Image 1 (cartoon, helix red, strand yellow):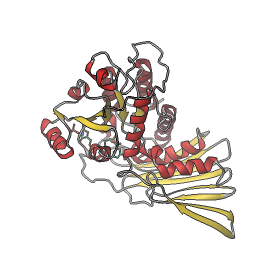
Image 2 (cartoon, rainbow, N blue to C red):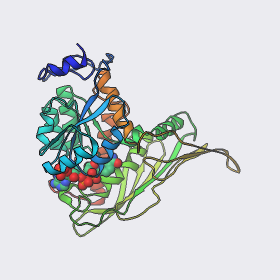
Image 3 (cartoon, helix red, strand yellow):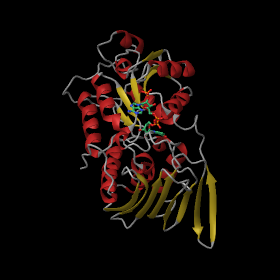
Image 4 (tube, helix red, strand yellow):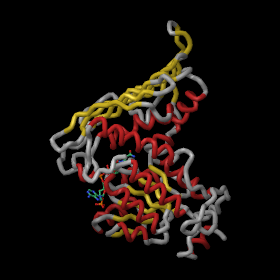
Length: 370
Ligand SMILES: NC(=O)c1ccc[n+]([C@@H]2O[C@H](COP(=O)([O-])OP(=O)(O)OC[C@H]3O[C@@H](n4cnc5c(N)ncnc54)[C@H](OP(=O)(O)O)[C@@H]3O)[C@@H](O)[C@H]2O)c1
């Protein structure tokens, strides 16, 4: 069955590109690498019309074999404006209508974090693959429920942690694994920005999941776990605003290997947003902004006569295109999880964010910290 035929046969769900019938409830789904039929673009349905939804769809235009086919908003007017600007075929005044659209193969969730769990579970219940903005969830328990549900239904799910698809950072991680800096002893990483001062924006509203740790701290934490795995201990401190939102936070993670990660984040500070990975044989300096760096410098050799090499890899669009390319690749290959965006990595970071918020005294409405 071709991809086109599969689409015509809704509601019997098939994997985009593979023609395989999607799994039923309760059945274990083997990951398959059946080659796709490349005769139709993978249709993305966009939930929300905010800042990152615009950025993502702009980048999606650079992704071969992918198209934004529908957008949903709480406001039909906003959906229409978004659709007109980006050339999206269908504009809906609700998210539910996107989920019901048979042209949508994968739902991209770009609502505030507080809505992610409901949106993702609804998309999975509608039989859609899901790419959800970071953080996947407010808490590790929420994230685990979402991952369990995707696995139970045999549907693709990934957190849109775009730095893990960044070609320059992928080369860095390969280099670290190949011993460029020897044994890693230190990771220092910062990400900060002076976010909007609008008190009603999601950055300041605890009900929408406002937290510098969840919003920007997740990137330094992802870098540290990507390189070093699970730490033994998490220490931290945060400055909370009058609504209890952590504007600025610092974390120290210690590892059984002897490595220490020193991480910081802020949504009120124009910080350097750089990162360094250092070990016995050298260091790697990741230029700002560390989650999509313009360049990286590898320093090695002798400390008094170092060899210095600076490099970067080409990036498509603003860099968000790479996660979309990976999602399209996975869907066409019939893969339920992305090796670049592994759910185990998402869950580990979610657990560490729980611990970080706990040690920093950061609470959100309805918290269910593990
Ligand atoms: N990957 C990245 O680099 C990156 C960058 C920024 C943000 N993000 C993540 O993406 C998500 C959205 O961030 P954003 O910066 O795009 O936020 P934003 O500009 O505030 O947009 C959020 C959108 O969500 C929808 N929404 C649904 N319920 C809402 C509510 N109760 N209050 C406000 N908006 C609501 C709105 O769209 P409608 O009114 O059209 O429904 C709104 O435009 C967050 O989880 C964030 O962490 C990722």
